Image 1 (cartoon, rainbow, N blue to C red):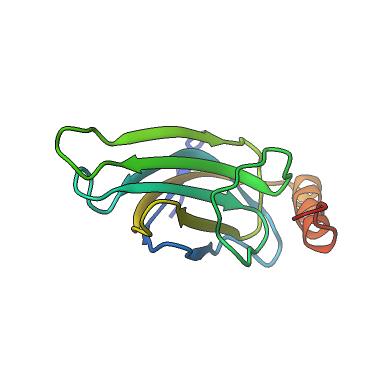
Image 2: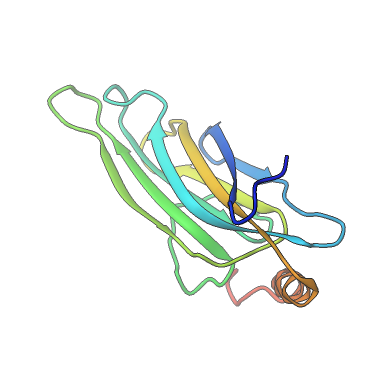
Length: 157
């Protein structure tokens, strides 16, 4: 599906993640000519207002082996993080914490992790990515950055 000249193509992804889950969003192409950047990232618990919940959902540029609630912005592979706190009584209100994302362009798969620090509840995410056509130089730079992150993860990462 083509967009008219000057229009941006937005791809949407959504899912319900159980506690400790890791999802893969497949974005890579054979030539790396398509890049993406995050334009929207939202969270909501599976049962708002009903379950006690403290969910952290993070998006990474490289595969992850564990899901946790540690947020470290010095991690160069972290693209986004969001927090959702659900209350288990009607007298309390659910809290949508900060949603923070980088506007970096990437052209490889991304990995979404979920950890609920309270009771292990599931959480929904909604993600919008802007599709960007990359020229050969931009494609090479984006791909090399991703390869470097895979081969040389930061200390502790």
